Length: 300
Image 1 (cartoon, rainbow, N blue to C red):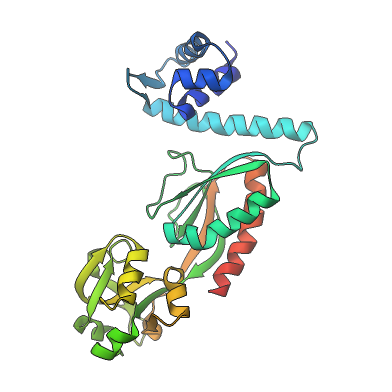
Image 2 (cartoon, rainbow, N blue to C red):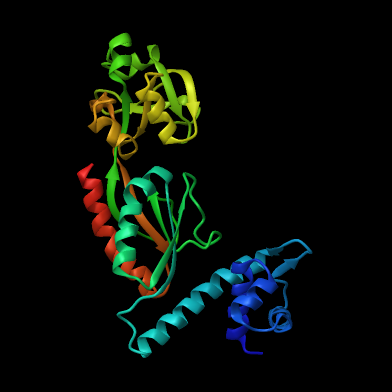
């Protein structure tokens, strides 16, 4: 059995979702695909895939093996390109994830310019306000906002964002402008539950010590765009990240409140898995993106 061939075949099976789809993509008989996977599982002494009539699912051993196989195949592909003199023409597909609003406002313009500069690289951009697991979701690079957990991931800091309280001029005319965090208790609030779970807004007092404020929850939403839109309409005061309402603050439809009571800015990082040399497609994206994201974040 050619282990590299079998490794490549099972990765195609997983990526295409079925043996028959992998067979068509690779241009080899379905029986060959099935035999290679069976022989690989026999060689490893464990089952990698659970097969049913409707779908394929990876076992725990399969999840770990496919993740390692992708890295190995990428490294081999990179080594072959270097040996063939193609080091300066990166190619392939990059899977990138970022928070929804950050991705739309800041990452997408960078990706657009990167695709123009590197026509042989394609990008799959997954926008989600939950942190996708890089290994399990097959993500090459992620934007992370906030303190980083201890892990084997490599992080490159590209800037920071503020956590700000904003309200519409109409609401402030009706309710008055808050002077201290305690004043928020008497105002209607639009709670963005991902940023402020339980409706508690973490601010600081005049001495820089943490203090919580809880405006009256008139509306609770699950996306920043909705919170910003509701705040612009005067539903209540809201608390979001600075980039999420930059346009509304710029055009005057929202005003920033209690700036002296904001918590420390949150760091923004580009993250990728550690271990081994980066494939050229990831290295050129990291070099390209970090400079441009720093500039965009600084401009905010």
